[in-house]
Every structure is written in C-alpha cells, then in structure tokens.
Image 1 (tube, rainbow, N blue to C red):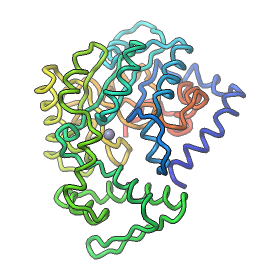
Image 2 (image 1 turned 60 degrees about the vertical axis):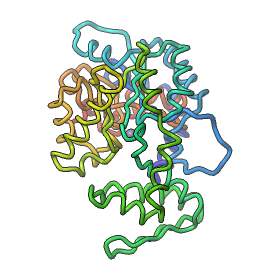
Image 3 (image 1 turned 180 degrees about the vertical axis):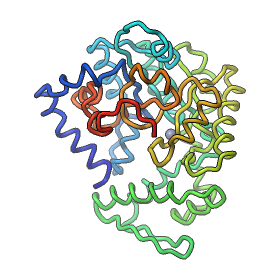
Image 4 (image 1 turned 45 degrees about the vertical axis):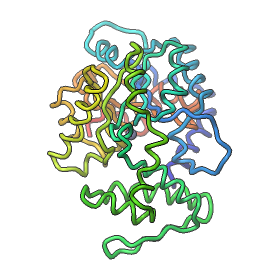
Amino acid sequence: MSSYTKKKIVSLLAPVLSGLRVYKLFNPNYAGLGHILTFHRVVPKADKDRIHNHLSLEISPEHLEETIGFYKKEGYKFLSLDQVCEVLESNETNEKFVAFTFDDGYKDNFTVAYPILKKHKIPFTIYVTTNFPDHKAILWWYILEETIIKNDEIDFVWKGKEYQFKCQNTSEKELAFDQIRSLINQNFELDHYEEFLKIIFKKSKEELYAFAKTMAMSWEEIKKISRDPLCTIGAHTINHYPLSQLNEDELVFEINESKERIEKYIGKVVEHFAYPFGKKTEASLREFDAVKALQFKTGTTTRIGNIFKAHKNNKECLPRISINRVTDHHVLKLQSSGLLPFIIHKGKRVILD
Ligand SMILES: [Zn+2]
C-alpha cells in the first residue's frame, strides 16, 4: 500500500471519527502542550497529472489560510521555535500553542506563504538546505515524479542488478514513487550519489540540477525574509542527504557547515535544525546526539506527534504534524488531540529512536 493510500484512508475515516468525538478522550493525556506543523510548498493548484504521494509536499494558499483559521478558532497561541523552547523551560501552565515550520527553502515560501503569514502575524521557521539557494541541489523527488508521470516503465541497471518498475496506471505510479524513493535513500553512497541518480533518470548532470534553479529561494530572498521578526531561519543541511547513511565526519559537516553558511548570509545565529527526510531509517539517535552536541536549541523530525513537557530534555528530536493535501480540519482534530500519534507510536509521547 502506497503512503498516499494510507493518508487517503485516514482522511476518509477522519470525518466519522471526528463526528463521534472519540478524539476528545485522548485530549487530556495526548494533546500535549502544543504542536509543531511541517509544511513544504504553498502553491496554487495546477491542472496536470501528479503523483499524489509527492503532491502531499504541497498545499494551496487557501489550505494555508484554512489551517491558520482552524488553530485560531480552537484558541491556539502561535509561537516561534524560540518561544516553544521558553514554554518547555518554564514550569507554568500555558495556553495551547502551535508553531509553523517550512522545510527545504522553496521559492513559494517567500512569494506565496510569506504574505499570508505576515497578514495573520504568524511566526514561522524556514529550514534552508543551503544547496537550494546555491543551485547545487538535486531535487530528485521532483525529477522522480516527472519521470514516473511521463513513462509506463522505469528500468535501469545498478551495480550489476536490474531494476524494473511498472508505471502504467495510477496505483502502479504511486507505488513506484514510494519504492524508488526508498531505493535512493537506502542505497545512498556519497561517492556514487550523482551517478546513481543519472542512471535512474537517464539525465545529464545539468538536467539533474535544473530544478533547484527555478524552485529554490535565492540568498537575497532568504536575507530579506530573515529580517522580519516573525521569521526564524533554521538549518536543514547542505545537500539534503539521508543523514543515517553518512559517516560521523560527513554528518557533522552537513549539519555544522549549513548552519555557518546561513549565518554568514543572514548575519544571525542559526539555532534550530530539521532532519532531512526525518523518518526513523533516515535520522535517529546518532543524528539526534550530533544536533545536541552542536548546541542547536531544537531539532525537528517528521515523526508525527505532539509536544509534551517531557520534551524539555529531548528538544533535539521534536515530532511534528505534517500538513498535506489531505489534512483537513477533521484530520487536524485527530492529530492535535493525540489520537493518531497514540495509534502510530503505541502510546509513547517522546519518540527517542
Ligand atoms: Zn527537507
């Protein structure tokens, strides 16, 4: 089952569960102090074929407005990540909070999301992968989507092994997207990374790098947005590699060098970090320890969860709630109440691995 199918099932069940108000039972113990939301791109809906699982990296401007409206109506306080740290450090009971974070550094964060956030005075964090503005990043997830949409089959040979993925219909295309995504991250080798991508996609080096030129925020835009007190710029490594696949030196370099590079451009200290990809197989204990040792105030994953008092001592692995195309107000209620995180993590509040 593709991860989009799972998301779709949740979105179909959500109105029923939210109508039954089952989620209210979880509120006292699993809603926590608040939530950190993960966004990627905010772009108007386009009328063309897409891979739905990948499409979940994008929401429309209207959806961003609706999400803001949901938390306003529910009485949440909108906090920056620095303020989330203050809440965790203080011993007082606080109002429920929500913090908005955007991963990678897409251009539409500046052109589309920022005006909306500014209008509503919402503090937000943008985690920048520095090779995005440097135009040295390979946004292979977009190349993968484009390749799957255009082809009925993807085949290639890597290290003597033949790979074949059928992509004739929608469900095959959705599944192929998930399978090739995992293949790229699980077979990651720093020395062969670019070569592997060239072989999968049958593209030249220039073609692999072309997406970053049109989709990434420029350093000028990052500098400009960072001057707004609503904005926090966080680090998201240099290359957006799956960190679990790197050796110790490469890991520290990816984290620390991206921090220093952003600091040089914006003239402010960078104190917040998000793990690229962020699943258990892509970032875990060793990566959490590295972020803690490098003195970041927070590190955020893509594990679904709410923020609890217990996170005071585990600020290097804060879970988040991902906002995607299927996250309507019913799904938000199930996530914010703690019902969905409870099911996924079997009742655990702090996810340490
Ligand atoms: Zn990312």
